Image 1 (tube, rainbow, N blue to C red):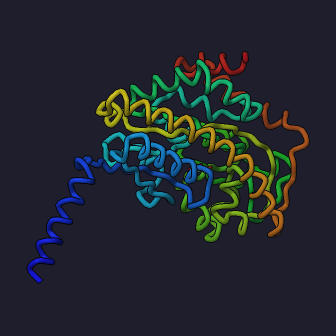
Image 2 (cartoon, helix red, strand yellow; image 1 turned 180 degrees about the vertical axis):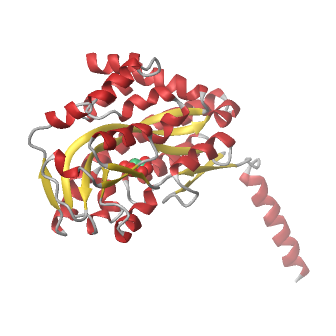
Image 3 (tube, rainbow, N blue to C red; image 1 turned 45 degrees about the vertical axis):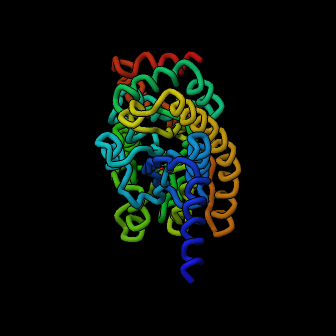
Length: 325
Ligand code: BDP
């Protein structure tokens, strides 16, 4: 018996030696608002895997999905205070941190995602990244926030005038509120996860979002009338806190940056397929899609917004760059 015990001890010691030096592991927390299977979630998971691989397991990123750690405006603060290390944000809440980003929420700014990424993968994206870095967010990848349209529970808009008087849920973002007010409707800022209940309780008549979010949240079950305006085409960003970034070695930064860039490509690819799937699911369950026939009355209503942000020194240059290219 004693002989076996001694043998066991030797074996354990040998295994420890074979395992090599113990690698210190750093656990990082990543915030995400979307559910499992959503393009953002899948891209973030792939990012986490690639970082773990590229740093030989020294960085383990836990992706906390479904806003379990709190809503988006709260998460922006959590990233700044170091409570979380990484996150995927849409450009609405990010613009509270960097006013110039506001421009990305302007209606009818980009013609499509390709137009948007031409700017974000170029000089404009670099400028935004620099400003965001100074505000505490290092951009690792620009994700697709899709094209947003209105959807309503009881009314079926077929014209921009049909939205007048409606209570429309918006993100906590200045431009979205202004846009809805210019449509003679009432903006109601609600956290993303409370929109479904808002419809059910009758607190809101309409909301606006891209099709994957319309479907994944189940909004399509209570708000079947989609008015396809594609009024905002905007990006989202995978970011890491500047505090964490400053602690990384140059080699690790390279791993994070490459993993971020690759995850963005994966996300954009998954996104396009998901848009079609989401529309199909909603249509099969009875959603009605009314395409806008002439967008010009909507665009004309937005004139005060363009004037305001053209006069605003924090957005003027960005706006001119995008409009001119
Ligand atoms: C989704 C965005 C998410 C926003 C949400 C919203 O991906 O980041 O929080 O819209 O409307 O499309 O709040």
